[in-house]
Structure formats: structure tokens, C-alpha cells
Image 1 (cartoon, one colour):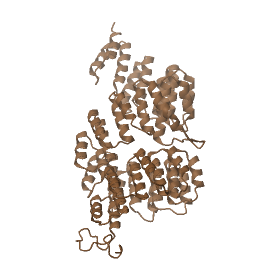
Image 2: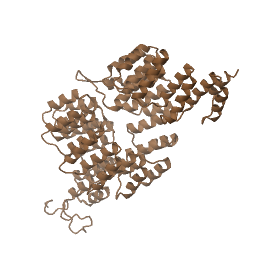
Image 3: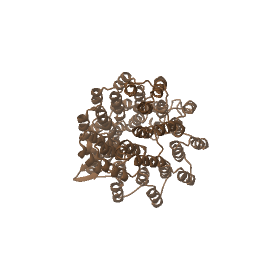
Image 4: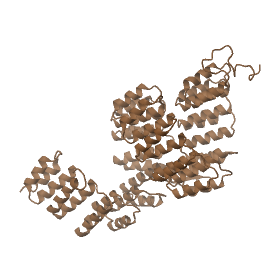
Length: 617
């Protein structure tokens, strides 16, 4: 019997239309429910099929994966009576979605044959894991490629290499589509090159609402909210993508009321938009408004749950919310894991971590930080060794944990084993210097630099500083501080003058380190120059009080001590009070020193008592 004319595959004779299937293709319904994330209805349609094709099985497997149910997705694959290249490739995509890259590679190697879809799935898996080297190896090994493959590698170049490498690759692509153009547009927006963003946008032969949303995101990220509004208002249609981008932009820049206005004007709001408004309130500290949005939503998904978990004020609230919703995925489990660690419940965190079926890099990072803060370095190292691929955040956490506990040799081994991965990519005799515009990679390099400079291998540290393709304020401040610690004041001063930007930490380094080597007139000049350019913090004023104490100028000290609250709105710390007790004692005003010792809002320790008693007679 013809399947189209009368078979059970497309019609359901003699069966009640409980699902509203009459006159529709069950496969289309199954696909529609799957894309909508409605697993219950998708499973009902699937179970209703008298003939379950490979396509139907594959759609159900993909639906489970999209909703975070990796176990059900894998079980569905192995329940299939037979497999084809599409189902094999779909399972590779499932594993890559959950960062189980080793399993994805094993699935690929187990396939009876490979086609472009299979190779593309493996390429996407390595791209998903952030491994540029292996992504490029797979790309180079492919016998045929399509625009999707080129766009995947282009995306990796824009993430991990400078645009000096990504742009030539883009220019050499055999063809471009909207995806590739949007990738380039997003890359320029990510690094803040808004002039190039505008140029690319103008030369694109066609653009869509994703292009407009990328422009909005780029402008809002770098504080150009007015330009983002102009782009938004010029769009021919305000669909959910554009509105959500504008709403998110307002949220990131703290314009909560404007975000709410966009939300209120949207005629149709999907769950993505509701989640964006929920995240807006949560990100900006409007916890009660976030709760109101959450409870006002007709439906919740795993993103809604994760957002509410992240803004829960106490561990008990987070745990109660987590236990109320049976639907979970790796992301929500990681948020709950972080709540245990942040709440100081390291044993509960360990039990929760051990009970998780899968771990990704975020899971490992949270546990490494938790064990490190608890002083349990051996357990942190055990978790760290679970990682099979390089991740800059994880390596930074483990290396920094060793360094902060004084284990510099172990820290140097952690960073040293990974440094080549960060700085160079070796493939086909080609050297690709990483542009480290990715924040996590730069943090890794700064941590490695700090370990070298603290561990006494100063020459290696300086060489690493000069090799870094990009530096931020932390990088410069680390080197200035290292020169000061070594007593190389003139070199430190010259480096300070070269700083592209000076923040309050840079100035504090100068005040705390350099000023002891110069006369009081220059010290005061540096301080007054600093407060004209930066708002002082507690450390800045502590440096100034130290200087006054060093000079023995009690009147000047008293004026600046009073300025902490009156002029700068800062609360004196224990170090400020300790310095005040010291200068009062040295000036012979022991009664004032005793009164301050007994009335300060801190318990005195041996240091404060010693400062008074040694000047008692």
C-alpha cells in the first residue's frame, strides 16, 4: 500500500484525533514539537507511529538533546533498529553539545563510512570544545567542504586568532553567505572596532535582523547605547531577535526601565524574551522583580530555572528551587554546584559533584576553586586531572591555587605545560600567533606572568611579557610591581610613564613603592596629580597616611584621616586606625592613642599594642 495514499505513516484511520493529527504529517508534527521543546507531545506523536523510520528516531533523539536530556538521547540512539549516516552524525552533535568530545570522536571513528555531514559534525564538535588546533586539522583533512564548514573555521579564527588571520581566511573563502558576513561583523564588534563594524555592515550585499542585532549588541557592549537605539529604530521590522538584542543591551548597561519598555511594547513574547527580561532583573540586582517575572511566566525552561538559581540570595532558596523542578541540565547543575561552593558547603558540593553524570569545564573550575579555597590542593589537583583538553580558565585556577599557597614549582609546571597551547598553534608547518583578545586566555597569561615574576625567575617573566600579543591593565601593573619589588625604581618609573592607561591600582603602586625613594615634595606632587585623574580608594589614602606618618606631620595626618569619610566617602579600615595609633604614639600623645585603640571598631592585636607600649616611657 502506498504510504502517501493510505499507509499508517501519514494518516491515522480508525483512531481518535486526540493529538489533532488528521490531515497533517506526523513527521512534521514530531519535528515541530521537538523544535518547540515540547517533549511530552513529541513522544506522543512518536509512540503513535506504527512505522518508526530512522528519521523519526533521529528527530526524537535530537529533541531529547536540545532539552538537556543526554541520557535519553543516547538511549534513543541505541534503541534504533538501524542507523544511517544522519543518525550517527546527530549523535556526534549530541555529544559535542554536552562537551563530551572524546565520545564524539569515538562515535565518528565507529561509523561505517563518512560523508560531508559526518565530517561537518566532527568539525562542529571540536569547534564547540574551543580547540582551534584540532578544528583546523579536521578542516584540512576534509576532502570536500561547504560554506558551513568554512563559516565554522572562520568563527574559530575570530574567537582565538587576530583578525589579521581571520580576515584573509574570510577573503579566500569560495563564497560568502549571511552567516559568514555576520561572523565577521560580530568579530569586529567583539573587539570594539566599531568603524570596521560600520564598514562591513555597509558593504554587505544583504543583511538580516541577525545583522542588525549584532550591530546593536556591539554598540551596547562598548557603551554606545544611542547608536544601538538608532540601529534598532531603523530596522524595518522589530521581531523577537531584534527586540531581545535591544532589551539585553539595555540590561547590560543598567537601563532596566528602558529594557522593560521594550519588553512591554512587544506584541508577542516567546520564552526567550521572557528569559531575557528575567536575566535583566537578575543581573541588575532586582531580585523581587525577577521573582515576579518568573512566577508570571506561563512556562519555564531550563534557562529560566538557571537564571533564578543564579540570583537566589541564600543556599536554602537555591536548593529548594532546584529540587522543585525535575528538569535539569548540566548548566543548572553547575549553578547549583556553585551555590554549594559559594555557601562554604564544600562537602555538600563534593557529594553533588560526584553525583553528576557529566562534568564540563565549568563543573571542574567550580570544584577546583572550592577545594583550593578550603586548602585541599590534592583534591583540587585530582579534579583538575579529569580534564582531557586545555581550558584557560581551569589552568588559571589550578596554577593560581598553587601559587597562592606558595607552591611555585607546581604552579610553573601547570602553566608551563599549557603555555605553547596558548601562544602558538602548530599545524602543517604554520605558526599562528594567538591574538588573546579572548578574556579567559588573557587572564591565563597574566596569571602565568605573575607566577614567573613572583617565583624569582624575573628574566623569564619579562620575556613572557614581551611575547604577549595583547596586554591589559593587570599585565602592566604586574610588571611595574615586580620592578618595584626588585628595587629597580628608575625602570619601574619609566614603565609607569609608558602605561597606555593608568588605573587606581597603577597609582597605588607608585605611591606605595616609588614614593619612598623620593623627597616629600615630589611625593605630595605625585599624590595630588593622582587624585586629579583617579578617584582614590582605601589603599590610596592609606599610602598618603603612611607618608604623613613617615614625615611626622600629625596635623596633616589628622586632616587626611578626616577626609576619608568627609571627602571620599570611605570607611577607615583597621590599617588606617593602626597607622593613626602609630603616629600618635610617636608624637607622644599616648592618651589619644589609647582612646583610639579602645574606641576603634576593630579588635586590637599585638601590632597596635606594641606601637603604644614601645613609646610609653
